[in-house]
Each structure stands twice: as C-alpha cells, then as structure tokens.
Length: 419
Image 1 (cartoon, rainbow, N blue to C red):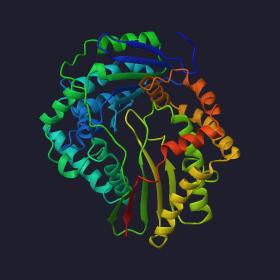
Image 2 (image 1 turned 90 degrees about the horizontal axis):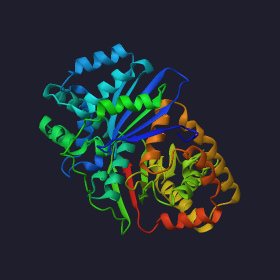
Image 3 (image 1 turned 45 degrees about the vertical axis):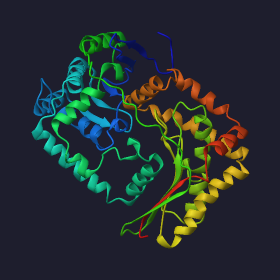
Image 4 (image 1 turned 90 degrees about the vertical axis):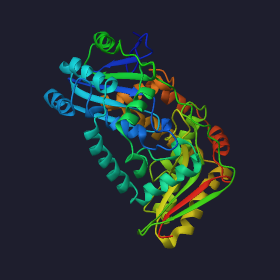
C-alpha cells in the first residue's frame, strides 16, 4: 500500500461496488458510510422529494429487521445510524465501537439492500417531512434560496428542494419508494467508505463477504435534462411578513471537476466566502456600511457531480434594499473590472491552506474527504497536493477566471420579505 497523508486501501468488487478503507487507531471507533450516487437529481419532474423520503425510510424496516429491531441493535452496539440524502448522493452512516464492526456491516447491508418501506412507518415519515417542509417555507432565506434555484435550474430536478414539496411528499406510497430504490440503489452505483480503528484488509474482506452477493439488475442510471445558463436578467419577488429583506443574486455555477475550481476557490475567499475582515462583501457591506445582518458570496462550495451555483446573498432591512443590491453588484463589478491585490491573493491562499487541515478532525470528516477523492479523481494524496495547487495560482489567473465565470449581464435576482 502506497503511503499517503491519509492511507486508503481500495477494492472494487465484480459487481462494481467500490470499497475504501482507511485505518485510524487513535480511538476505538469506526465509521461506515454506504453512499449511492443518487439524490434529488434523480427525482421525476412531478415528484420532488422522492429520493429524500425513500432514504428516510431505509431504516424503518427491512426483510430481516423491523424498525424496532434496528433501533434495538444500534442501542446495544452503543452506536448511531443515520440516513441522508442530498442533491446527488444518498445513503447510510453507521458509527460504532471498532469491535462491533461485523454487526455494523451486517446492519448497513440490510438497511441499504433490503428495505421494505412499511406503510405504517411511511405515514409517520411523511408527516415528519411535511412538518420540515412547512418550517422551511416559513424561513425567508430558505424560501429565497429555493426560488433562486428554481430560476437558475429552471425545469431541472435540481431546481426543487431536496425535501420536496408538501403535496408531492404527502401523496407518495410504499410501492413508489420501493420502485425508486430498485432503480437507483445498486452496487455499481455505490461506494462504501470505512474509517477508524480497523485492519484494512480484514475490513475489506468483511465488506466483500457481506456485500459481494448484492446485485441489482433493475438499476437504471438517470439522464437528467441538460443545464444551460440564463440568457437574460430575471427578477423574482416574494412577499413575506418578516422583518428583513433576503436577497440572492447569481447564476449557474461549475462542476467540481472543472479546471477553474481552484482559482475560483481563491476568488471566493477574496470576494465573499472568507473571513469577514478580509473578504470584500462581508467587510464592506456588513462591517463598514452596516447594511447587512448576514452576507456572503460563493461559487466553488456548491460544485459537485452537477453544476452548483454562483450565489451572492444579503439579508438587510427593507429601507436598505436598493443600497444592499447596489452594494452586492458593485463589489462583484469591482473585482471584475479592477482585479485583486497581491495582498488579497496571499491572504486567501494562507486562509485556504491553513484551514484545510481542519476538515480532517473526525472519522466522519475523513470519510467525506475519501469519498470526494474517489468521486472526483483527486487522488488519496490530495491532502499533500492541495497546498501546492493553491500556492501555484497567480493573481492574473484569478482575475481571468473571475471574468470568465461571473456574469453581470445574465443573472437572477430573488428578493423575499416585506416587498
């Protein structure tokens, strides 16, 4: 095994399932992540929230275990089991004492490969999801963000919230969830990441023994519609009886594998995604002018298998609406026209390379890193490579990529609050 800053043993089973195991013997815990490359992007057009609800139901009953038995097993293991679903990924995380790894793998397999979506439990989960959706719909920043996505992604599944819409979620049935599971959860679409106090080869053997027979001939990769940038300026206003105005402006972003990712990371820190005392938008609009309760901008952070978004956000009082909008656009325009300084470049590089190591403070953090390294072909020595990638970026490169990727001619503005 080649030595890396974070050691990883990689195996690929004949079914296509990828196993990634990283030993960390500092504490006697182990973290198991079973991740399928499916999520909101796979939802049918008339079924926002399907992936989310299906994933919520994975631990509510399997062919071997009732939901009570699953809860009992986890309690006896002294661990935790959570399900998750996002724009592009869904799955299960199990954390236990390292001595309980075989039982954790056994349970993870049943939850991922053998769910039955019991009707009685579905009724409860639908109600929980509905309450979450209602709560989100009362939050003006969330409402603004969701509407912003609808505008920039248009008729694409990514334009709808991961949780979905109330009317859609409340009408979903067990058969529909089971069919979606069969179509999207399969070994050829799944990565298992194990981090913790384990012997890598022994752990890989346990995983192979349990998951090696998993097959799914019903798997059908989703081909969502193509995404295209806006061709004009779009303005949307939504009235809500709240104290502040919430504003999003921006447009379609980039994929994680985009060659411009690293210059844009540096640009993000300078423009609006870094510490407030160095990042322009927070420093000037919030700290100096007092216009904002909260403000930022970002393009690299939302990138993934599919394009993320360039979003500049500000929350302000209604009387400062136009001044805040003008300020956001002015800071973006200033960066595009006047560029950045060498001091800003040096500070951004220092911030990125200095804070990068804090992404690896727990087994869960390391597991997320290893998953990203696998999905985006970063290499498991990425921890060593990242500082060099950032330090190689020049001022001219940041300015060039900013002008290429930020568009002040064709963008969306969404305003939510007392408008």
